[in-house]
Image 1 (cartoon, rainbow, N blue to C red):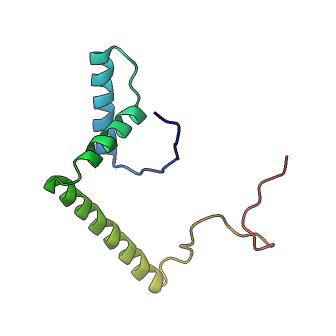
Image 2: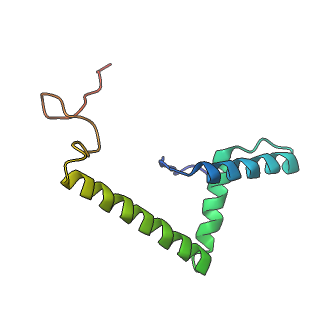
Length: 105
């Protein structure tokens, strides 16, 4: 099942995370097996991807895309007005200009 896997950072609201925890608890009780939050989230993503033509799913995707656009444009405006000075992502660069270096073993 998980032979070809990758890691993903997923940022969720507290409400969504709590609802997923409830699903994990109910599944644990019903199946009499330990069901983790990660298992629940993977299952929800897989089921959601199978329903890609549902109008409700598309509407949710649209709402989230618009919310991200609004946040990014607000951050750009704040940066342009001088409110934010360092919006760079990724590792900070040291004197060498090559980013943060890991110590060698």
